[in-house]
Image (cartoon, rainbow, N blue to C red; front, side):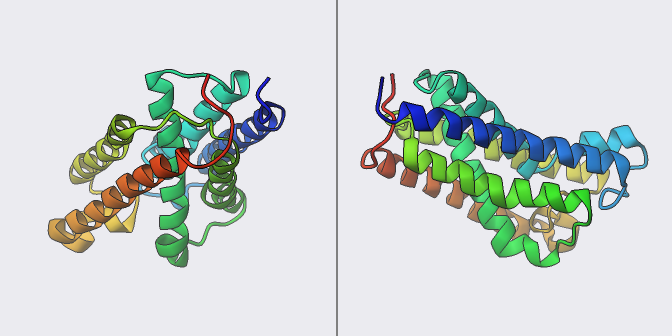
Length: 215
């Protein structure tokens, strides 16, 4: 048994549970209280719109990836490598962008605030820390880094197209109506560079840090 396995498995399980709990709480809060999704009249439309947020999708990716690692910490496949790197990098981007850029304008209340803390602070911290401590190692290469960028690029494309159709955007930095396409394009480029840069940073760390080796 690899020496990190006894500690890795419960940590992966904790992270997966926190990520999924944050998503569930956000869905419940949105179903019960319309704000801040008042543009959507029905409960169903408000709940569906929760999954337009990069934060929620990234917490879901973390939840799925870390639950799979809890079941089998030595799991290895190309799909798993991409999923895990997406989980770690996307949740890191979520934490960085929210706490440095978006937190100043956010004012969640009640259950929204609990979900907010889980999704933007606790899960990003625990997920990234878990990867730094335990890995698994040997799962990141250049192709995995580049393929992992498909997820955020697809989200950006979907968000901009959907926003143009319904005149609503999940975050101020992609709001074309408020900022225009030129500014939003620059904002998206910054996020894309951050994502890919963190991916290559993860590649460099993966080769140097100790942890659970890939099976």
